[in-house]
Length: 113
Length: 112
Image 1 (tube, rainbow over the protein chains, first blue to last red):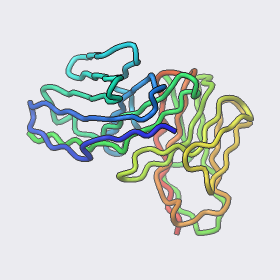
Image 2: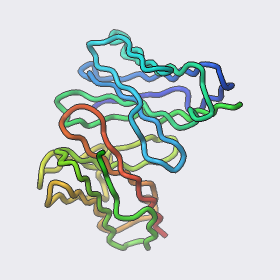
Image 3: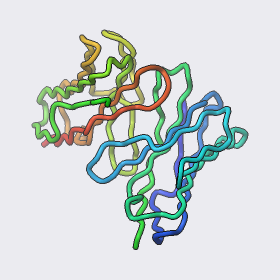
């Protein structure tokens, strides 16, 4: 089955700097890659996703890149703010799997003022 | 606005008890999921259901069972709770086979 690895496990950044989280996946049939943000004590929420027919997607300060050949994808957060502090999860799935997601272990991002 | 609710935010049970965790979604979603979340391990899929009375094992089904008698309700059952099942349990639903999963608020289960 699919295996998703996520790095780093923790990331400390100064406010205003950029943050990058990287994930690799094992199943070449995976074609959907979402990122979820979980603030302390709250439920995970989707922040951005990308499908395998696209190499990059951007939404304001966040962007995701996908390299299908290398089977890795990354989340980029620019101009970080304290409210970006959270745990971020990458995930992968394929269209024939009922929406089942394989999650990475998560990255704790701390943005210090 | 999609709403996914779970029956309890916090639950404390004794070893050997039968435990029921309930999840309800109000948006007529087809597929529902149960995950457990542990520090450093991310979200691991226990079971999922793609239709009423239909269920499939996820990655860690041992010690758990599920029930989906109605489309909006998906229950997770711990037949005989053990201390290693102390965890945060999250339910999620999705309208189809692709796209955003909507999560419930989670149930923090402690088994003593």
